[in-house]
Image (cartoon, rainbow, N blue to C red; front, top):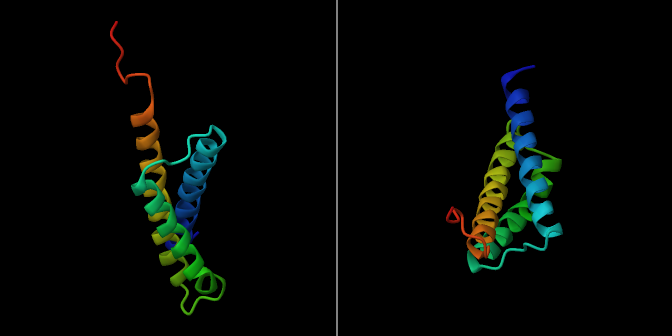
Length: 98
């Protein structure tokens, strides 16, 4: 396996984990409620929409990897924002008194 393939597999694995977390949050009805989370979701969806053709028919061999990394970064940051929002909105304190 060459470096690009290994890197692509890692990017896909990380993306899958981020998407799984987001799906679980949606199933748990912990949808993003803040403007920042919504902005990040729109940004990730717009990037995916804009780059779909380039992913399907890349101009260069490394283009798909670059697009995957960029999309991955957007999805991971969105997931982190959703998690932060869910924690901030939680009625249970992070460190309850003993």
